[in-house]
Amino acid sequence: MIDIAQDVGADTRCGFVALIGAPNAGKSTLTNALVGTKVSIVSHKVQTTRSLVRGIAIEGKTQIILVDTPGIFAPKRRLEKAMVRSAWSGAGDADAVVLLIDARVGLSDDVTAIIKGLADVRRPRAILLNKIDLVKRENLLELAYNIGQLISFDRLFMVSALTGDGLAELREWLTGMLPHGPWLYPEDQISDAPMRSLAAEITREKLFHRLHEELPYRSTVETDSWQERKDGSVRIEQTIFVERESQRKIVLGKGGDTIKAISTASRKELAEILEVPVHLFLFVKVRENWADDPERYREMGLEFPSSD
Image 1 (cartoon, rainbow, N blue to C red):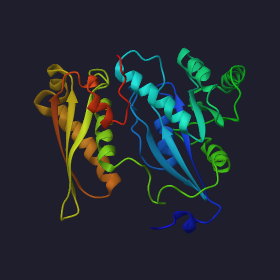
Image 2: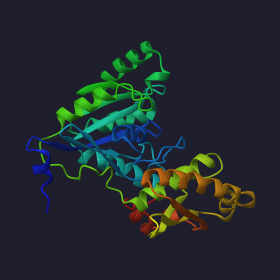
Image 3: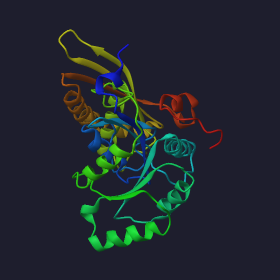
Image 4: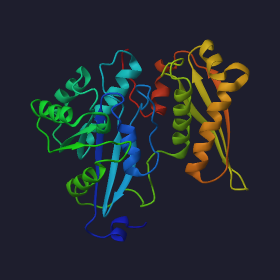
């Protein structure tokens, strides 16, 4: 068994950093930017991230394990409750917590509630004002001051996860703040999620991009088979599950146009990530009330709530 710590030196650091925030604060975009490639899907549709996604970034001799959590809000349905519970568990288990706030939205009810909950998390914590390229500087300073009246924090960062502005300072802080210890993952690993899971998530992202208004976010995708062929290509079969027949028809589209467009977009991105040709086959099935099935929650890495 290889001693990773010995390979990278005795003065290595490694730790978990939970990224929390309200829906659409930019947690997935930040995770991908810090890792340097896509490990978490991004969508304008709220609650795209459902379970904890861990992206692995290397900064000098520090391995930063970023835990992209579901957006935190006032949950109503069973799936929503499971997602919010998962987010708070990620914060409680981490070595440090970074609260992302969409600078355009500011101190919304959801953000204020998160700040109150964060007061009980005894970890180094930073506030990150995201999307600063879309907000006037005087508004940013006022927002930072108002946050400081609600909670104490170790650092405040103003960044644009999309453009990369301000991320160097965040990396530097994380590098010096995480505990000394051996790396937990090989140097070339970017996520703890298997490729089958990431492939399903990428297709779900394309599904949301194509059908943002028409399709409920409770639709899901599963990778049924993954075959590495002799010519170096990969053959992938996936099933898109929806809750009603009317939704299945929406996903298929007229003459199958919609499902073809989703497949093409997903296949193209998967081929770029895997760096091999990809043959992707998508199927659409109705699975009524899947959001009430404990087995589905286990597959997503979520705890099944006892009540809806």
